[in-house]
Image 1: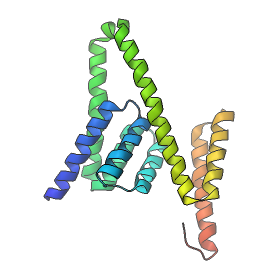
Image 2: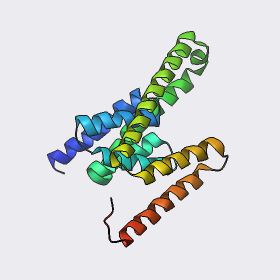
Image 3: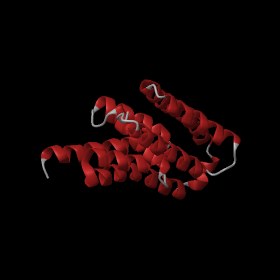
Image 4: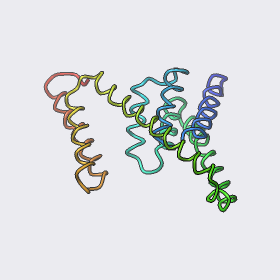
Length: 190
């Protein structure tokens, strides 16, 4: 294995380890991934991270693990996926072991309760930042179809009790149909 690939694997592992240690939700972690992997290290483009995020959301399991795995795969193939996934998984597992060992003390500690409320507020800000970034990506593409899907998805989630996987299937089908219709008219895919 060459030195450049080893360096990328280390960057994936250590950065997902740090992100997973500090971000307390998958969506918050994706916002941090953008800052680190896209803006700071230049390992991905915004569009590539957005694609990884979309796939991670539609896959079963925790979004932090899924997105880390996909980002790692995009950057360094299968070894990258394993490095990023391992880095992402270590902190929550260690945290769960600590919580289990010290559960009775943690539950009754007032300072821990205050700390958790503060973390919750920070997570809301990170998720909001991520959502704004997604809408900025749609705005840059200037595609009415994407805006329509976003509005339909919001209305579906807000006003129905149907399973979310049906929404995902609908959006995927609509995107595939639109792509084939657009290509069928002699144009090129956007």
